[in-house]
Image (cartoon, rainbow, N blue to C red; front, side, top):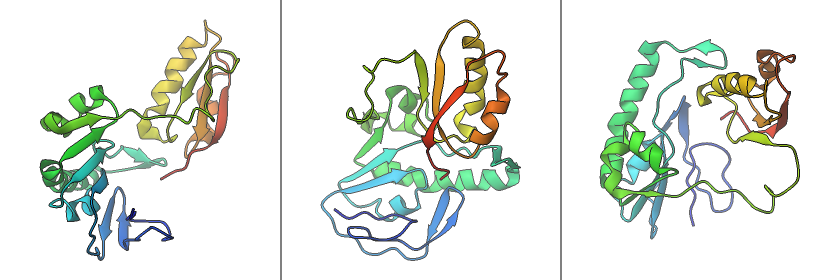
Length: 208
């Protein structure tokens, strides 16, 4: 198996592609010739997948539509900057999806509501996100809780989750368990401690 990432450090089994890493849009400086039995790409950021779009069989795991957030780490992103990136992404992504043999989505509902995937439902296969049962044991006794699985960044809807839990926790003893990320330091300030139970920060989830 060959792994071809656009960032990080190369190691055994990895072929590192040198890129200019723009936000959500790594631009390859050089792309090597790759011969393999099966090609499997992850998008968004379709630049790497674009180079193998004509290869077959090509499986594409589709994580999400590219919609740049209004703010990143507290900094406003002007529409004049985000719109061209979103349009360039769509222009490169459509031929990748057109030529793909199989497109993997994590839920059927997302595939149907995605601005891009709704045009390719005939080749979409759903593979649900999984958990490691030896690590996550839902049978363990503890008080009821809601677990947020994902990076704690603004565009994931953290604000909506906190606001909702604030209402729920006024009448129900349900904890909120989540990881740590770019906005974790401000989360406790966004909940009134007199109105709700505290958030349990389970650990670091990264900022990429």
